[in-house]
Length: 106
Image (cartoon, rainbow, N blue to C red; front, side):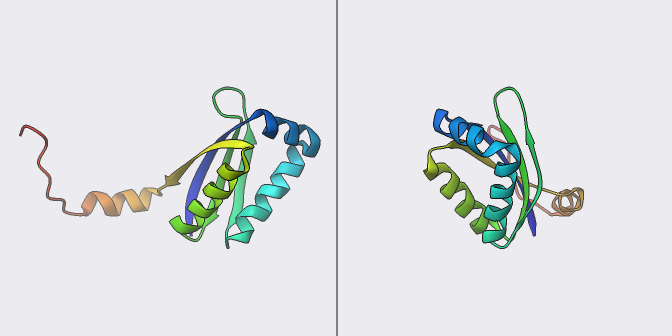
């Protein structure tokens, strides 16, 4: 499974839902969302600042992550960004891969 970070900012409608469900209620709803596409919720944190919530999920693939992102975005309750997370081992393998690249102007 791949790891994904979802950063979200609640809309006014989403804040109303958070007040009604509470933080723990939203964690359980998020867990069910991840499980519905064959994944799992690893962590969920609320925060101050640009984003209201940070969520880390293990999901089967990019298609599952896109499905979650589309469903969440279509709800109108959250503005969400999805980030693919890479392990150090994945970066090690990428660093050893040959790449044919020429920088602009070089």
